[in-house]
Image (cartoon, rainbow, N blue to C red):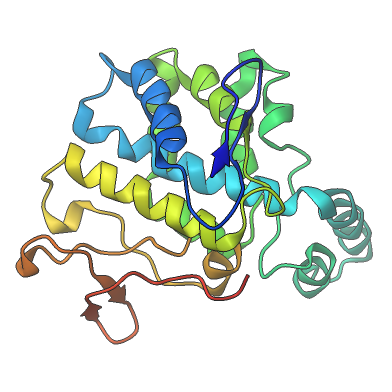
Length: 242
C-alpha cells in the first residue's frame, strides 16, 4: 500500500508491499486537473500531466549525481572535449542533464519560470529531448504560461517524491500506465494524436517506458508500438530492470 500525505509541500508516493494505491495517484491527478479546469479541455489534461510526470521522475533519478555531472560538464567544456560519454558515466544512467536547474530550483524564480523550465528540458541529453519533443512540451509550457498556470503546475510536480528508493521502477511503470489509462478515458482522440515514442532504454531504466501507441483498430485495447518494426503488440512494455 502507498502512504501519501497531501499536506505541506510534498506528496509522498512511498509504498509498502507490491501493490499501487491508485486512490493516492488519482487524488494527485485530480488536484492537477482542478488547476487546469477552465483553461484546458478535459481531453487535453493528459498533454500536461503525462510529460510533467516523466519530467519529475527523470528529475528525481538524476538528483544524486547532479553535482558530479555539472562539474564534469564544466571541465570537459573547458578542455574542448566531447563531454557526452563522460556525462553518461558521471550520471550513472543512460541520460543526463547539463542545466544547473531542477524542478525545485525553478520555484525560486517565478518571474522566469517559462524560460527556465524550457532551458532545463533542453539541458537533457538528446534521447530525452526527443521524448519531450514528441509530447510537444514546449507548446504546453507556452500555453500554461499564458494561462498563468505554469508556476502552479510546476510547483505541484516538484512536490511529488518520485525518487527510485521511494517508488521503484516497477511501481513507477504501473503508475504511468494508470496515468495513460485515465487519459484515455478523458479523450477519444484519433490514434495519431496520442504520444508515440521509441521504447528507449532510459525509459525502461526509470520505469516510465509505457509510452505507447493505442491500437484503436483493436477496439481500443492497449498496444505497444514497436517503432523499429512498425508493429503493434497487444501488451504493455513492462520495465524489467529494477
